[in-house]
Image 1 (cartoon, one colour):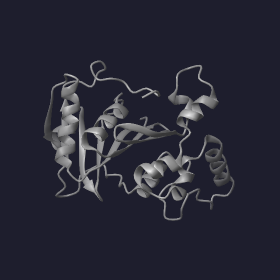
Image 2: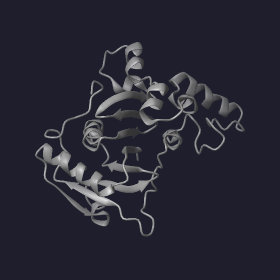
Image 3: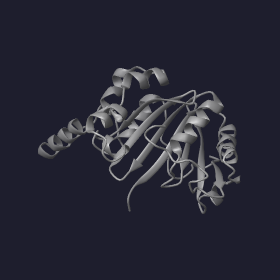
Image 4: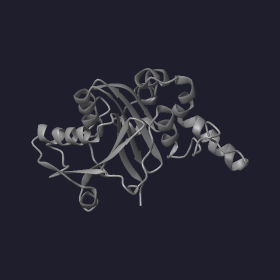
Length: 229
């Protein structure tokens, strides 16, 4: 099965407010929704809102949802906060930094996959090459430790080839990282440096996650993200 993850982390400790805002976004587009126990949400196509860790609430969107950047911009403005959006598909991942409803930076491990056909590599890299300093300013962190996670395709390929030649080479950005830079899960280590904890697939005992069940995730009426958002 192809790995597909769509996640938004918002800097907020009020999980109920975040869940209500997710429902509010649906209402704004005329889509009925309801808050449901996470046990029911797991059997439906629903948004999962995970209780905050270190002041960050993580939202998991259903696979192949087409609007995480748009809704994350809206949440950032509505909650007056910052948001980190991660989109994983197969072996590639992207990250979008948002504050005050405005996209501050975009990064993709494969920039050409994020743009319209016919777009040049130079233009794709300009849009999706990532700017660690912009991300550092957005989230209030030192940009130097996170800069290596925004590596281009060539650097990640070289690291993977070096590991193949010398298996002892871990390929991690920092020794305490969990994943090699060329692995799709490297975004988890980036998130850690931003202060965000990637949630476990299953809720821990006593952890109360909230489900937000939309009547539909089709577009329209919910708008589809584009590289111009």
